[in-house]
Length: 191
Image (cartoon, rainbow, N blue to C red; front, side):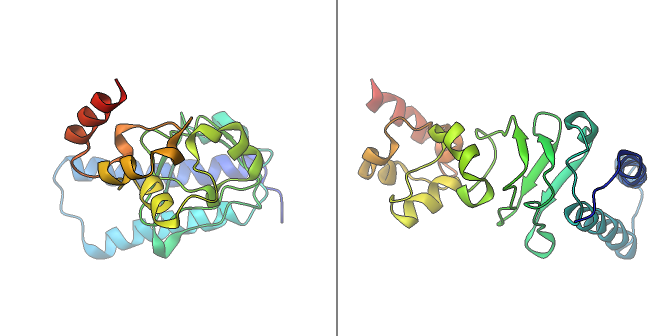
């Protein structure tokens, strides 16, 4: 995999940010944007992710990623596992819709487990060990793991499987759409 130099990274990043910022300004001004223009912008973003995911990014420091958004959807999920990227999620906007990107082999800081959907398949073993309070045991039931990581855990499921949550971090975001009511119940049973 070819190593990406900092100059090229900055040039590509600035070009994309200019396009995206212009798009946002136009949206904020209630300008009409054609479907073709929207598709062109989306295609530029997809191409940027493809470009990044096909390079060794180990020379790109954490702070260089500031302002970048990593959004992944089914049709443009990218595998970052060979990039060795230095990703600080406190300065990167991140989102994934129904997919879990592969960040194995990346140097990751400040991943937001509280507000972000995630899966153990995204990370390497060292990262999981360092953050074990956010990961269920591999032998936990598959449906429970799916609901926990995708943030659709029900109170009933939590109570019926409480043994899997010993020493695990549970945040209100792990629960489905009624999590506010459900969390008050969880807080009650923990007292």
